[in-house]
Length: 355
Image 1 (spheres, rainbow, N blue to C red):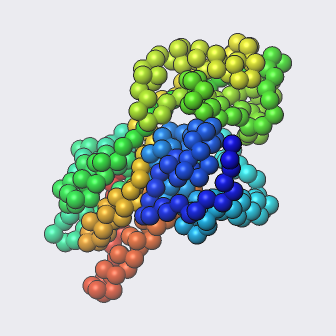
Image 2: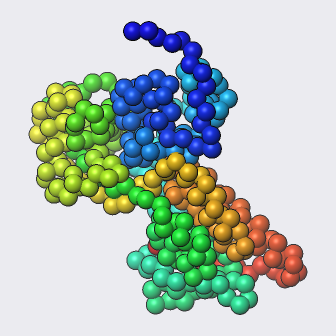
Image 3: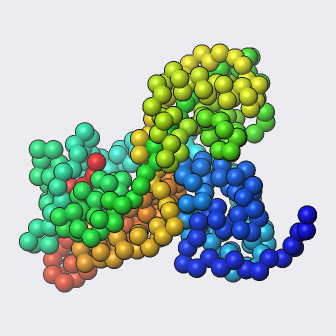
């Protein structure tokens, strides 16, 4: 086979699908065996549909500035390696990320704020004074400013009255559903490969798309009970709904089957749990960045209103936190501007929108 060492630059334009670009440079097998399982694990999507600009911005920038894809990737790896010298590859929260929203709620209460649970917001309207009225359950709340931090479909419903064009854009954001299957084994009966887990290429025809050796990855899990080994598998991708219709027992069995094929693990788990995330992961198809830009453009005239969350600039926790900081900064700027215009103290917020 004749191999061309240096291909001419593949133009990426304003955006391009990750799979399409990588396949043009390195072939479909690289996409199917390496790129697809990586992106499937993060976005539960299709590499040939996922936006490189939105999902892998570093790679998009490398594609724009380098003739060689491999050269650009090496540069990214070198920067990542330098950064990783200052900390671990994986970082987590002792007790799991489920403790994070509880800590946020505790912090809000400690500062005199209210946290309403089981109280969906059904209406968000501008007041004649320039503030906001929020209907939450049987309560009417007033606020100087609101941050809408809910999934895109819920945000679309809340914004339809005051920002119909932004709402229409958000209503078009698609979501993928998935399920996580957690299995606990007696350590004495469990032999696993080294590492923190593995990814499964869809072309392999397996049901699970990834497995995490949670006791290896997170020390606090191993410390909870040294006699147990905890594993987690995930199933479900965008457009895959059939597998998620199976009951919990079936998902446990198919996970055990695929784990045995991959690692030889044939023990019986002492405990299992299936956690389903219906419409849990927003999809970032080609052009997603432009959709997000249009949403923000349509909202720009509504002072005291900001949006944030996984539907905009990244689905990971760090990206969502950065999105929240940006929304808070925007709101703070709006309130300061209003204070300067009126020369009156900014009133404290009486409530906020959320679901």
